[in-house]
Image (cartoon, rainbow, N blue to C red):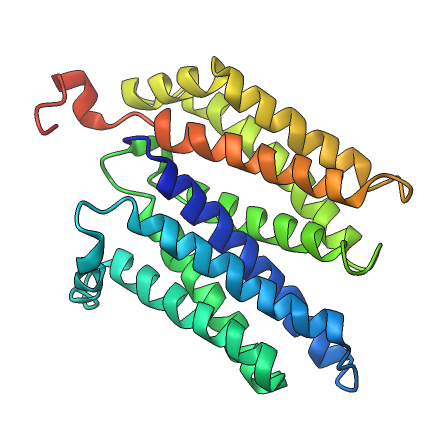
Length: 257
């Protein structure tokens, strides 16, 4: 898979925004009488983060001003559904800030979940055997939950700690186990596993996620540093996801590049 920073920013930021929306929606439904300003502003931040992610994705295109063309193949392309879902999700997140409706919040969370689902399909191509499975879906969902919960602890100190802690633990396990499994697979999968396990960036990212996980057990730890550690860890491991996953054509000299 070709490495491009726009895809890294796009996937990480949209997953962060979706995670925030899911938890914010959950909070609105279990506590319907709560309408405090910090929670309303959290929806504004959710829309802003998603918007930055969408803007970053335009840098991946050769002709950014024709990005709307990505929507013309909704019948068969998960990429088209991904673009549509996250565009609608971003608009709804901003709308919830102004209207603050539980119904709108639920709709935003559902569409965000659809976006995560289509994202998991988009980045699991048959030409890359190592990730042509549920791996991207699992990693993306765990990243969304971990990032969303960790970011919202900046508003409430411990309310989302348990969900974030479990997601971080699972994310670390998946990231470490999957490359080891690939080593026993086909030539392309084995090459992918070796690239991941030999990458300093991958191990730095895994350590940062682990540090963020450990920090959740200490209430006096800096919440901003904890979130920054998790975000950088996810970002670094996402870089190896895009740069270290081997295409089946690599053993044919990449004739289609």
